[in-house]
Image (cartoon, rainbow over all chains, first blue to last red; front, side, top):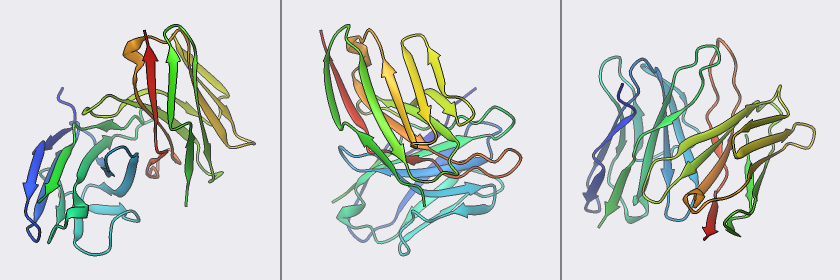
Length: 115
Length: 116
């Protein structure tokens, strides 16, 4: 039973390029959350998705950032025209809300470095 | 929206002592309060959680208390060990059974160091 899988683990992009971060949730989980973590700081909520729907994107910058969770395949966090300030660790978490089972499991994260 | 404050930001204790980390939240609709432990370079992992219908929960050396009136919740670690050294995050969320779960809003973390 694989946990949340994120890839790549490390990603280096030049300023202006696009970054695509992938997240495969725990099998059977239909809720995905993306968080950003700057060095020495806490986890900051970005977006919450269910299959094919964005439920809450209040933490997502209005420009350059987008997220999707298609019916088939992983969730994708896309950052267009990256800037140095986008350098951070991006964590994905998944959960399945059934009865008492509400724990959110985190992936290992993708560490994005913009040079 | 929800806002979670966490204190202290760093905490250093001697092995065997207790450690207490405190959080406050602003949204009275929040009813689920998990605590995560994150070791350097690793993913956050759930160590304990509490729901608003419970005032206290314990699991071996770890306990969490919740005061709904004051909107406070705390993590207590007893008999600390060097392997407890990590960053600890509190979080708050609103769970609606049968409906959608609000996102987890995290505190900024507490870096706990346990000196042998």
